[in-house]
Image (cartoon, rainbow over all chains, first blue to last red; front, side, top):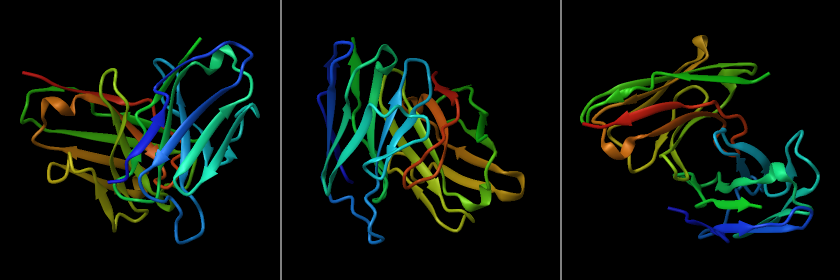
Length: 111
Length: 116
């Protein structure tokens, strides 16, 4: 199975400051169709996960532009340029190319 | 607006069975991979199973293979998860999710509790 390793697992942040989460996969996530199927999700306490980013760097509709995704191959990063209170929660990366699909362990972001 | 409404969660004893359902609306259900993801209390996300658009291909996590069966009824816009031989470690909130390559929409989940 492809192992998705996130770091850090806990991230204390300051409002207005930047934050960054790393996700590393044990195998390449580049599909034969040329796409790289790496997604980022945000889960607030008591809520369902919400997709923020798909195919490494594509931001979903309604996601603030302070969120960005980057990376290639096996190394990926989610960046938040300026933390806001609504950004707290747990962030997960997920690979969508290999079976079984796998998620990272989650990074808990708190103020 | 995409909506995914799960049902069927309940409390059962180890060894029991449950069937989860997910009614989808707001998109062309027959044109989409569908997926079940679960989350044990206080834990992270675990992919459980996915099914191809027409049901011709199914995929399972090793932890549920041979015990769970994913299926769909496209005319009814409904996804199912038949869960047999349930174990305590299957206790989780089960989410119905649209897609499998970069899943986008998630339901609110249905709670399965396996306990004696």
